[in-house]
Amino acid sequence: MPNKFALLPTAVFIILLNSCTVFADALPNIILLMGDDHGWDETGYNNHPHLITPVLDEMAATGLRLDRFYAAHPSCSPTRGSVLTGRHPNRYGTFVPNHSFRPEEITIAQLLKKKGYLCGHFGKWHLGPVKQSSPTNPGNAGFDEWLSHDNFFELNPILSHNGADPEMFSGESSDIIVTAATKFIARAKRQRKPFFIVIWYGSPHEPYSGLKNDLALYDDIPAKYNEQVFRLTSNKTGRPVTRPLGDILRERYAEITAMDRSIGVLRDYLTKKNERENTILWYCGDNGTPGDGIVTSPLRGKKGEVYDGGIRVPGVIEWPAKINSPMVSQVNSVTSDILPTLCEITGVASPAVPLDGISLTGLLDNSLESRPTPLFFWKFNKAADKQQVPWIEKDLQIGTTPLVKMMGDIYTRIFVNYKHPEILPTDYTGNRAMLSNNYKLVIRDNGDEQTIELFRVPDDIDETHNIASQYPDIVSGMQNKMIQWQNSVLQSLTGADYK
Image (cartoon, rainbow, N blue to C red; front, side, top):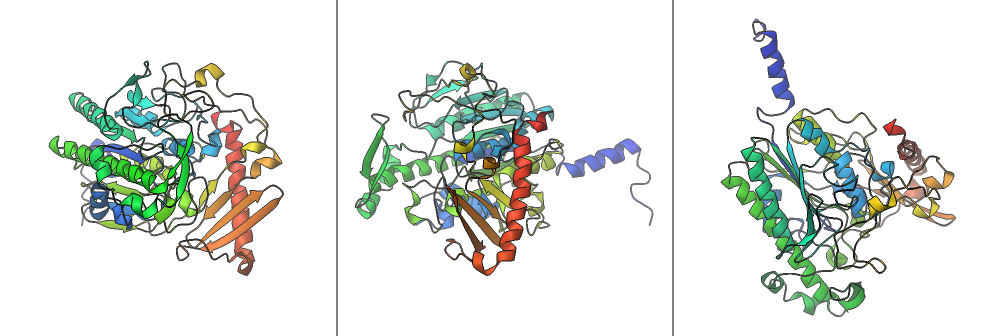
């Protein structure tokens, strides 16, 4: 039989090939959603005993549920950087919250903007100040419009629009940023452009608050947990306060339900505007559950730790045009995978720098059955970082959007990012982990002492059976791979990728 493409003009043949590469005749719209401190178990679909999350539950039941999805870091700013860059945050000095990323980094917004996307950011930024003069504001990271906060926010949030002076918006914060995003969608439609939107919620980060009707859903929680107390931020003073745990959880759960409801509002709007079919909705958390919310989790650890309780988060993708029947994946995946995945879907070349993520498009046709590369997690030992020359001028790193939680004596945040021209032996320290398809290695440094643990995954979900002594060869092999990866990361940290 003759080749059916043989008689086609060359130009037509090239067009056909290109259309296969980008998965669809029309570029998909893309919306990335992220909860703040929203851990893996805190959804109805993951069998939480109290939480009401009907929208996320429906997305998980009809879309692609990523059961083994991880944040790149056990805290917020670093993970957010991994979403934008596809790289581990230690590569560009975003070691902990309030460390900015570097303006030289190539973001997914910059890449999609060149492809014709209109790009918007709404909500928490936390990768540098959002003010107009900041070299790391959303605009300089590729976003055409932003209504954003330097950090987290609660009811009646104070936000900056396109870097202008902050102003207060009355209402529930999740609803406010989703409403702003829908207006941005309308703008993109008027301009006949595909849209790329990042919605990073301020919820459910403490200090907590909630609407009366949402709080009422959890009126039974205080009686279950109020014998315990927890220390967190006071909404009245911005300083630490000790409160009954049940009262705290009632407010936390109300925030999660409000966030879930806002996702439903967004989905309904997409349906109304005939955009939902070819829109990718990707929801995840930015790190594991903090100590005040970990009471029901089957996972070991919490926010700030490299055990699964600190890094495993909800992950679900909805894209009706391509995911038309429920799918569940047990493949290890991470926030660093978002950039390479979106690059492949849209036919955009990935940045020519070391990436830590891989494309997950193989999950859509079941061709990716196991992860070909391990995942690495690493809390850089900030105390060992003696190289304190600022990467960005100090006045450009001063935030403007106030929040309830005080830092010292101020209600805003000051960001830092330091040059690191020399790799030091102490740079290899800090709690870290490596996750393969069968094992997880955890290395914890405590001064001169080091604890090494090996767990068989996914069987040992609560990471309680340390089998390191039984499998020294596996431990040694994983340690060697860890050091090789750290070598690459530290080379990036020096700034070598920008030359």
